[in-house]
Length: 101
Image (cartoon, rainbow, N blue to C red; front, side):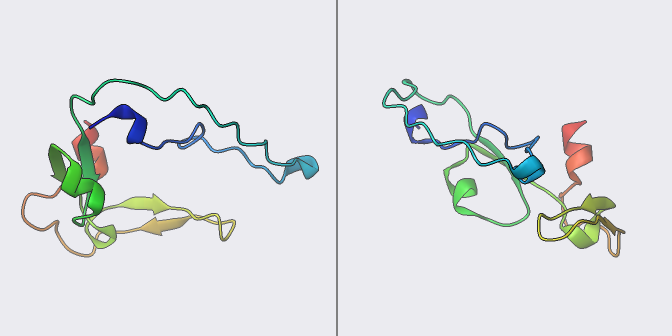
């Protein structure tokens, strides 16, 4: 796949709080020059067969919310949901932590 067709964000993992001190979002700057070349490998971790999985070279099945211990957050509320394992992961799926290790 060509790199110029992949989308990304600059603060995907460590987002900034844009509401602090009446801060306003920065203007989006369009870059006409997209990365060139081809993507050698696309690996996806997902518990459902999404469109990204269809285009991936490797799909690693992750455990669903009910199959792992985790912390879940949302920008819709100011608290954290602790998730507890209710059932064992199905087939060969693993938690994200097990896959990353």
